[in-house]
Amino acid sequence: MKKSNLILVVILLMLMGCGGDKSATDNLVTVDVTANYPKKELILQDFMDVEYIPLGTTDEFLTRGKVMDVGKDIVLVANAREGDILIFDRTTGQGVKKINHRGQGSEEYLLLINLILDEANDEMFANDGPSSRIQVYDLLGNFKRSIPYKKGAFVSNIYNYDKDYLLCQDTYAPDNTGSVNTFFLISKQDGGMKDIEIPFEKKISTVIVEKVGDMVYGNGPRNSLIVPFQNNWIVTEPSSDTVYMNQPDNSLRPFMVRTPSVHTMEPEVFLFPGVLTDHYYFMQTVKKEYDFAADEGLPTTDLLYDRQEKKIYKYTVYNNDFSERTEDMSLRSINNETTFYAILEANALVEAYEKGKLKGKLKEIAAKLDEEDNPVIMLIKHKSPF
Image (tube, rainbow, N blue to C red; front, side, top):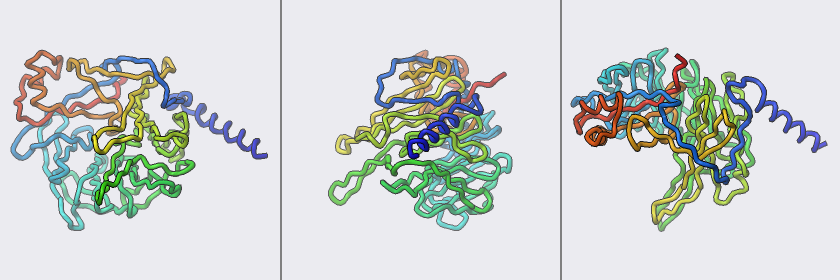
């Protein structure tokens, strides 16, 4: 009887992985995290659109360029340590509004972990990690409401899920605790929460902890566990061997399977999906290994799955506009349009321009830069169908 039930479960998983919307998943991809795959080199501009935004430099708008979110008309940038929220015009790159509500008051934040834009409602959501709450402001900086989330959670990533909810990633994951869910939805209005329950054998923390005397040190992968893809959300629970797609009705569907099981490895090797496109699934493996004395470790391998060839490769992606520059396709996605961003420091661009390493639009921008200017933001976007 138990064997029959097991066969039924396997069949159902196969149907979930292979049926339905082919544009979203094709067949379930299996990744051997221990395999030595062949190499492939790509040119970024061959499969992605690239947009450069030189951030305007004034005494009021000085920034290191940490992009929080990108909308149709504006770019949200934060100086998190100082508490500054800087709104830049996406077309001109000029500063539009500077907001700072850092403090301990009921309408303030202690530390900006994330900042999410909801252009449809002219609102932004400031994730204040130390206070376990999300502060909501309009785009002029006026306070609107506060949304508390579950105590003890450390929400390291947050996304604009739909018109009613935000999708949150809780990084706090103690060992062997099967009751802790990594992902949850939270209402934009009243803070009502819905857990996203991913099945796993036992909880495995990605954090490495070492005690030296009275000091406790910790380190672990910085990869995002949430990737927007084709109006769905790919969610990775490191304790599970299956990566799931969270669909608009909040149902889960298997998207990718790793082998061998994470529960059989010591030290563990984790698999994290990165940028996902119609042609390529980029991903990264991270080995849970770190030498605190030498301050080195967490070795990674960059992989891609070619959906046309149905093969996995190690990869290198070159930027055609910047000679010898390679791009990391494992970075945190911003939203369904902009997969990720990179900060191009003004002094580095001026030097590259003088050495003849730049081409196209980036060369034109660098020709007008001063070494002390704000950085240029490079947005990596899905290819336009037109």
